[in-house]
Length: 80
Image (tube, rainbow, N blue to C red; front, side, top):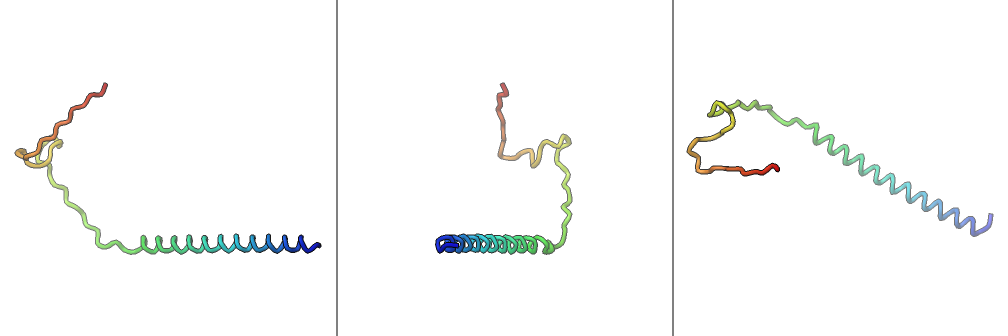
């Protein structure tokens, strides 16, 4: 093999080694981040609290709050 071919083979080997090193580092970082996320999500949340449902003040269920509230919301729409 000529000297030029040997140099080219060495350069290709270096490039391949650099690529594999980069892939290895990226994979290691990805595994570390995945482990961190899994570890954080597996921690106990705490006590589970059931929220009591409050009875709605009106029978139709479309209104909430006092009838004499200072805010009135009106929606004007045209669906044509």
